[in-house]
Image (tube, rainbow, N blue to C red; front, side, top):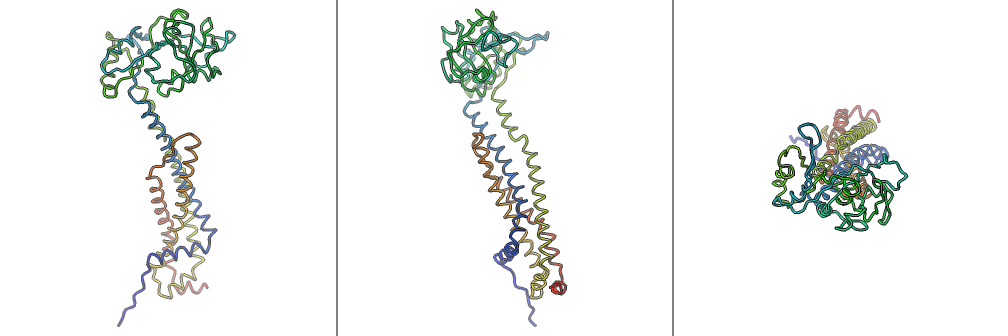
Length: 396
């Protein structure tokens, strides 16, 4: 006696069955897929925005280098502020591997647009004495005007950092500003210096001018040093002992690029929060898909009974509805990936960042979509498979 075996559905047949269930109710399918799309788009956008911001910082590091070190006086044994020697930069230049060194000294005075403004209004701008080697050491550039030279460092001439010029409302040299108790002529405005934000917020005059016009003591408060890449660590170990041989612990050595590295590390500080919001949206979308499939099972009981009466097994019915849920979730996931990639591009362009989307982001989004489709389709598929043919046909 020949035993009848149910025909196996090929993958293409399953795809057609699942697609027919969606196209029969297109509006419901679209609305259910939107929840998945919103969640996936949110997650992809968050990852892309964080990656784009991080890439911008890393490119800045590559351009600026990590071989700049900064030395500042720490606290002495008696709790007072230590002092660096006047020749600190010259001493640092003698260390093997040092390419350039420059120094600045805080004058404790303020810069104002005119002599009628109170000296208590500083606008966050520091007036600092500087030597001529500072600009080369920081690899900075003059946006407009000129840098100090052997003549102007002795005269009431000042070069403004980029931020200082903005706060003073100046865009070009040639004007005068009030420093201490006299006028200083602005001879230059510097470009941005990501590794030396304190210089961006400073008004820079020569050490001789600071000593002559502002009674500065000539001691630097910061020494900047740039060395060759292979000597950075060895120079770092020698700097404190070089600028303060008697008490090396009273000199604090830092690397400005470490701040950018830390910024790159926390570029996605809110990524976890936003991914959590995306996960909630995905959960809501998954519930929507499951609800759509449950309703589909209730509405198509007659279809299920008819298929069962023609020989379809429970497994085939179960697989049909599972595939339908997967297709619905994949539709939403694909749309979400496209929306997320577009949002990442728009965000990057709006903030002048390189548009970066890690390959694992869309791949992970699609894998998540498959998982959601599977979970959302399990219960409706099991429920559809359990419908007896006679009961299903009796509801026709």
